[in-house]
Image (cartoon, rainbow, N blue to C red; front, top):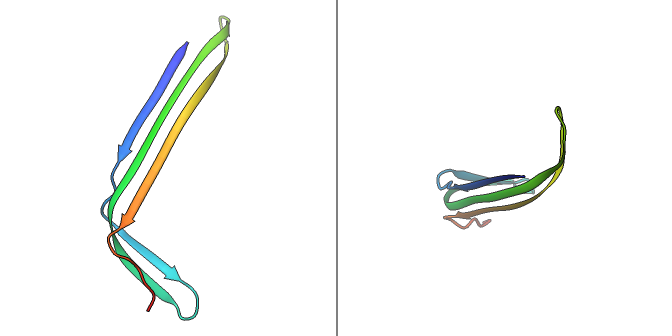
Length: 79
């Protein structure tokens, strides 16, 4: 039997967003980014049901959760 897991978290609250609209007229909106979130969880469990001197055969089941959130500190509008 084996168990494996990962836990992650993150933060990305510095940077810029560059929104280019290629219609007529061309608009390039630059905004600073604030806040942020990056989260993930992973868990696996399995069992080797056949074992030999040079091999193992088994199965496992896994679960993953992923989340990412970003909010801009300014609202972009076309003028």
